Image (cartoon, rainbow, N blue to C red; front, side):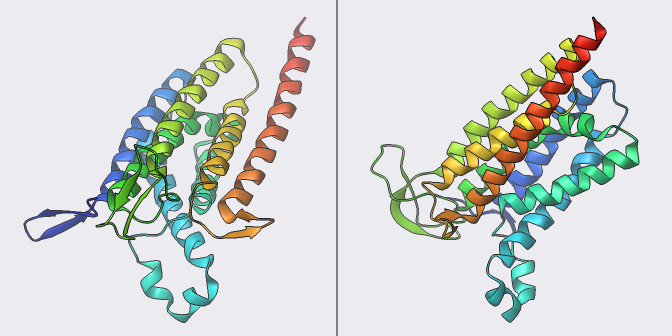
Length: 257
């Protein structure tokens, strides 16, 4: 693995480079989604602010998962380049998006629908950064032919393990495509706003829950990892929102007859 790229005296972390690439690509996807929704907003500004909030949230959530260790020596952990929690990133980015939607005077659910495919692609590309740096996001030992070892990773292992960041890369790209298609259907059929975002909560929650089965994270809630517990909440909220919005769409179509 390649935790750093060395360019003369500079040592550039590959994780940071891939996160930056993910934000850049996500900005173009969001701009395309805004365009088809006829939303006048700066996608690059939105992704920049939401991305920074997500990174801060992911870092803070990760360090607070071990509060005793964090409070014994907080500063080095806060500024570390490695160790980020998916759910913390979601909370940080989601909070920023709510504020931005209000600032831009765009209906919240419409705004979240537009951001969902871009968020999925950004996350997928960021996971390649985890793979390159070998930061411990890999899975349990495996004898499958595509198993990988990370002897030079930030969290090294010489055992062949599941390359879970690579799994997530492909899965989240598929999720992004599905969300984009749902968005097209919603716009064509004049469905209720929020269906894309609810699908995002459901699909990404299921994906993360299943990936955690072969991850090394400690178990806490009813034999689940923290990420799995958060995924259950994500799926539950997504299902509730989906059915509520589907009923609202059906009622709207009935009233229009």
